[in-house]
Image (cartoon, rainbow, N blue to C red):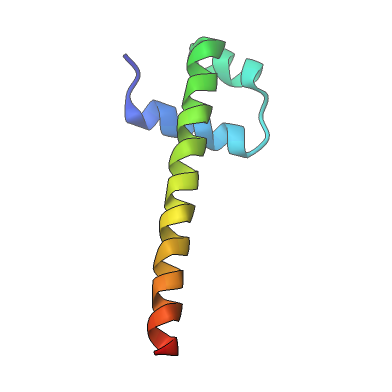
Length: 65
């Protein structure tokens, strides 16, 4: 089981454009783990954006009234 800190560090390296192969070697993880973390991060990121858009639209609607 990998710690949250390790996943966060690995994803940070990925966002800095480091290759998945390099990250897997550096953090001693499998490619399948890395790709699942990337997918999980992407889904969470989209949920946050959707939530923020919803809040923004609510604020905009309340300003119109």
